[in-house]
Length: 449
Ligand SMILES: *Cc1c(COP(=O)(O)O)cnc(C)c1O
Image (cartoon, rainbow, N blue to C red):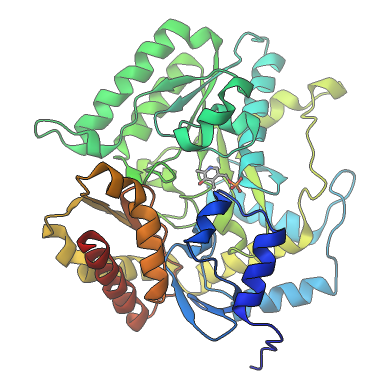
């Protein structure tokens, strides 16, 4: 393919730094940290205008599942473009949104049969919080209006979602704007002490929830969790037992369970939904990121018949009065349908099991490394923490690692001292070996600096 390159990467970078305000970035750091101008992508690789390439080891912020410029998703979108790009979803409906809602309901065994759409993950979280509160008001419990989140939780950065987020970097500056929420212990298996197992940590963490629900259940609408892996805090993993015990407590104390599967859904942890590993369903399940294959902004909240029916009435004010202009966008839904079709056609969940095992084998030499702790894996997420005793070096570890990775044709962005791999599902044998080898090389280099 011939890609016109009228301008070089350095031209695009200079123009970008003048006019684009980049997300989650101290712009001044770009005086040292490279900005990369992407010209095109193919499979797990991104290319710049000079043809330099980068293996996308973090799925472009956890969204990409089946590679960049995937031929099957491209074809579906091209077909959809000539039919319908978008129509408002109030008073109208269309084939892609109906098909997608039915297929998602079916993937939950019809436990969660009602899909409400938005565009980004944070909006899905806002919707789940508002729906939970409104459900309790419709049901005659208007005092149930508090939300509970976990230590280290991340649910997005709009004001409502940020109020149930517990990552200092994102939250501290905006604290005065936020609604207070209750925070309970994280079941993070790294908290194990004195030979505790991950299940022991889960049992210990759940006691915190039990105490809170016993004291304040009457005023709590919902608890929100990232099932199995709290990603943004640094890939904190927990045992499925936690979710099982949490479901029981939520039932006992009449508190909604919101599963934020924005990052962990769509096969990322080994099952299509992370909750499946605990054999539970939440009252609300939020999806975004991978659901459109990483192509278009799409998010949604799945909920139960019981929730849906509490809003069903003659009275407009009992309805869920929430909308986004692009709710149920036809192109995004079509990308999602193409994504789900690939899951079926390629037996993706089984294939991922092999990829994950291969990746673990290639990374295994780091298991015994004296500068590595907490080596862990759940499905297609593999992570470890670097030991950097020097505080100053620890604070620059992530940036140094990123810079060195880029020099080694690798896109990885550690979170603090946590290095993680969260690649697209289309790695071939050479990619797997290359991803692991590059990661190990970069790690050795960065800790030796
Ligand atoms: C990314 C993420 C969000 C927010 O999604 P955006 O599309 O970035 O708003 C919410 N929850 C979790 C668990 C996420 O990983």
